Image (cartoon, rainbow, N blue to C red; front, side):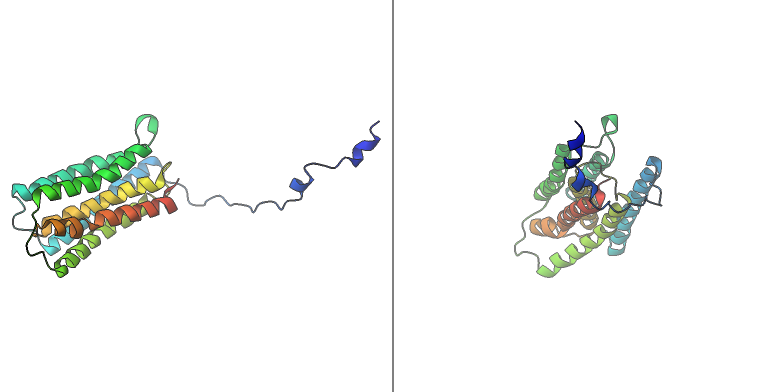
Length: 220
């Protein structure tokens, strides 16, 4: 009765004929513990702030830094940074990170908060500022943002459990906002177009860089 069983083809024969996958070696470098990672993040934040302060000190602080018209946007942007960084970095209930909607709201809130304060406190210049001033302030602002962005990409590599592109964009925008604060404490030109584009360029650049870095190297 069982004589014909040998003639039945094996349905899994093609699976057995496959070439086995290449052997993946376990990483030799141990992953940092949570306290070690937190120390690295805090150190990166402090180093980024120190860099922005150093560049601002070298460039020089504006003479009217203490006036309400100048101090108001700086305080508002600093508060936005102080609230945004914990939202983007720290875990919430049950150890889970901030959700996608919260990250998207943060990415939108940074440029909106910057632009809103700029509109309230800046003026429309007639004639407009020369192009050379726009380019110089934009270059200095981007230079302020380079170090915080590089440090964030380094210490947060492989740290995002979900939405790595959006999480990177949020952190990058906040790094750019720090640079915008730095250039605002230096440059006395309060023309709306100049503040929006020359001082605000590191926010857009930081968000784009952070999104790319998060998508490529951010996922845990």
